[in-house]
Length: 294
Image (tube, rainbow, N blue to C red; front, side, top):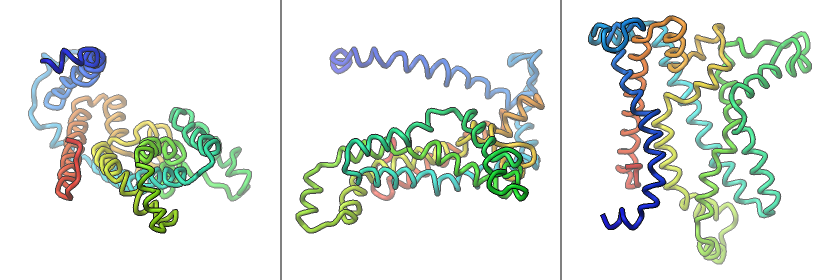
């Protein structure tokens, strides 16, 4: 109680955050009851009949669900292999730029795409990639192809546009972590004869390894819910075979087909998988002797 009284203003500042989470994150969770009902808008939650696991059984028998599930896994792993390490590499490179103004200018330039919504980003790239009037048409002329309708190229488009938009902003945490490394460590390593590459390997990377691990665990936890806005703005029925992910499948099923209970069952299943991945990654971190997120 003494600690609470001593830090009462900090706890007071926490109240709006708790209210926001309660209203927008926890109160809507009562909607998961739809997954166990034959929900209809006219009957509502209180009068729709309970049907047990009927919608989960239907979900597992649905071919489109498994297509979306495997697309989600493949795209998530593709992102994990690219979107996770590249911000670390960019942060290491920025940390080596000694000219302060030039470094700040670079940081500002690479941060900017993050603040552009996926609607605008998708519009820009769709215009550029238009085979009749875009940049592709100007370069390849009669041989220009519509890349956004080719299933074999769609995932690459997602990854490249995601890197363009988010890789720069993803460096913020790593650069902040590097700023916390003591300059004495660099001086001691330099006296021992370490070059710039050796400084990166033996001082900078070990200094931010804890942050990298925590970011990896958090990334694993949200891996299946990664990229709805992007995919929804880029995809079309021609690329469903490789681009339709769980979130877009749930959204389309719930709103277009009005299968609310079915979509709720898919959403619960996705959340359960994310929880298992998060707990597994956290336990793996602790098994390796590092700190987890809880």
